Image (cartoon, rainbow, N blue to C red; front, side):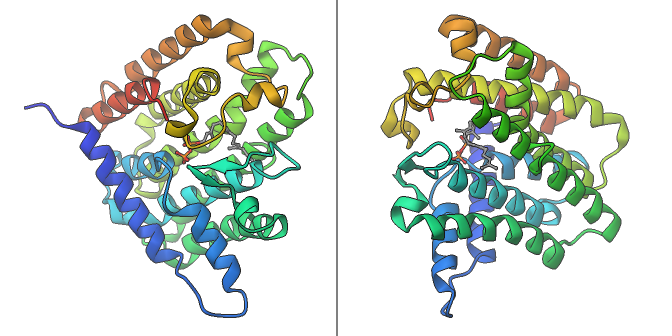
Length: 295
Ligand code: GRG
């Protein structure tokens, strides 16, 4: 009997959402606004892709979902912070996120900056407070997440993205930009879950290959959706790349070229994980699902 992987994905995503709701409580204190703004941006929207990848990494390593849930939630908090800051007028200046006004539109810029900061810090607080795996594994997984989020990871990609707005870049620079801005955290999601649950070294290369190719394909699809996607379905503004003079795969390869490139990357991702049993099959399904996504 074939497995309904879509339900598996949605169930795992819902588990991450409900854990996030529990971890980041509402507070009734002097600084309650910052908890409200964090909850606004973190809950009630988002595919939970990074959280699901982290849980899947844990399962692939032979662990339980509950063992790696703090890491999965931390990744979603870092991702949410990056979106809050990315939407600010100083960066991409987007008014809509996950179908709602962006954090700085709902509150104000100072609150959005602080909410993003609090989400980033909170991610590491959460791991330090709640990790259920031993300290060696906790540190190893934390290191993966910290490096992927920092100046040589996601922030590095964002810097290149902003610096080259409206300027021509090479294909090499484009790949650097996107593999860091988007790919690094996606890869860290899978690898941190795998590491936290004590995964064997022998599967790491295949998982890294999968994560790298899927992360890039995800960005290529994001570029395509910015051009041909529907604002309501996406829950964010379209044609924002063009407006901001962004370097995108669509601009480099054309719409058809970008679609072919995303298909090619997805195929490579699928091939990398096909020998890895049922969770490998789930990852292969997920890569295909992300290729066909409309949101
Ligand atoms: C501000 C340090 C800093 C970094 C920002 C992630 C990012 C870097 C910017 C977001 C800009 C963007 C639209 C990137 C394209 C890929 C991407 C990360 C899309 C959003 O991720 P989804 O589709 O979002 O997984 P949901 O809402 O489903 O969680």
